[in-house]
Length: 191
Image 1 (cartoon, helix red, strand yellow):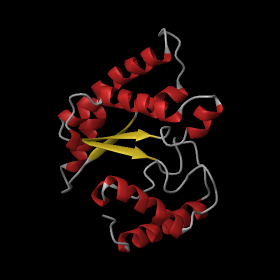
Image 2 (tube, rainbow, N blue to C red):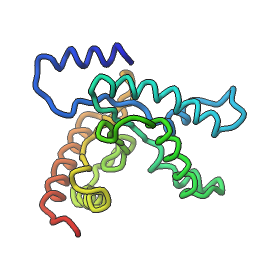
Image 3 (cartoon, rainbow, N blue to C red):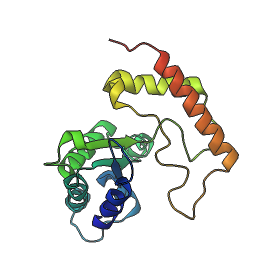
């Protein structure tokens, strides 16, 4: 992580920028791709993951950068949790506790939290701009307009060798995202 921080800081020396950040995985998302083979419970495993990630987050924020937690799981597991007989709200509350544990001692103003839900890299249909605007307004009404960013932050692949969509679909999704963001920005904020 220190090498990544140093590389970003070096690249930033030649430009003027505000809000430079490094994206890192949220503890709740990492547990999907990695299996607990050591700890006595899933909760103990998540706590250990959060402790390890805390060091990465701190390395980023100690350098004056913003840490962006990328959480592809929290907003997308309702079906999985409920299909297995679980209580989604209880699971979300426990997940938020783990995230907060990983962020302990890190200034709030140096934290961004990213969830995927405006446009999808996993499906090939292009979301309608009005649907995107509706989603953005819902988040803006809940979180405050200044706390919502419309982007394809995850991109369209989670690795260098993985392309989930053809370029024409990617560009169409980006155009739809921009149109939806413009629509949402024109709508008055709810009070």
